[in-house]
Length: 490
Image (cartoon, rainbow, N blue to C red):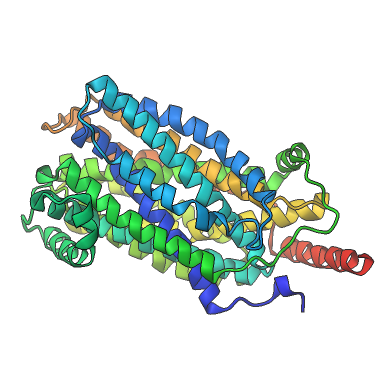
């Protein structure tokens, strides 16, 4: 049996999933909480933060394909992509802590500091996450195993999301009232996570356990230290438990210009980029506004942690379907149906009243349940696009193909977070004051109607995706024959 097409062991799948636990300890923190941290804790204007996101993330978007090209040309005894899981996590953790550090500066100095530290954070994140994403494409060529890896990755992602959303407020509050230093935060991490869970659970029951206004910048920073230490450990575990098996065909050249030209001629990849931008715009707009929604519309900010946690659990339940659906229906149709239903329930959630917790949580569960399968399948779809390109061109550029996933994800988040903040500015949002009915209506649109439009757009574009189940079988057979021919000629 071709070694790159064999079955993966359970520990490899779990180890690969650990990488997205680590990624989401960072990603979920700055996707959900960073905008609110900048406006309500650090004291920056919403429009200034929106502009900063656009500028810093534009550079970061350009860095993703550069990182993909670099990773494709990396040669070490550990492979092309795994070494970055060893080299980059510590700098990434330090950048995250610096981003949530609040030096006492004038308004202009604060904004410059935010530009520098956030820009550094996103570069480090790309340097580890692009190779991590590409690793899926070189662990095996078996489509079923790739679907499994994609599912384990998404389960890891939502596990990291749950950890952040369920403990962030509790940790930040605990460190705030304890006036903890960063070193003390590390020492008390184990016990404080438990206490944070209890505090957030009580808040979800509408018990006034702690006021969010009591959270200090130092408390926020200490919470980030805990997440950073955990993330570094998970990245190291992924490095230790995974292996790279799929190698480029013998004789493949190394021209990056030709790699880029091949990529731009990869029609399935172009479709996936457009779909990813819209899907991430959905997640970015909705996720980035949830804290504002609960603070100003629901008037129970800590309850957002339980809301987000239940959404993540629902997504994991939705991902469970991925194990069964592609084998019978392929990936295209389940993707379209699921993301369309997600959009429909997002629209319906607009009419939920602030006191109607039951409807609020039911819609959250339904929305995230149907977003789970598209989120999971996307990574396997990118691996299929890499195979399509290799069969068509005779060249494999896995890192560059997967860097598109990171690039399109970040483009979606950039559009979404900036649009969300600009919309808040349009509706005359002011931090830490009672909002007008007009502003509250804008918030409701930002967590319902606007994200739903992104879902419907992604479903329509996915209708154009050409790689059905039969076509993928032809690609796998063609690549196997080409590799065997190369091997026999060598």
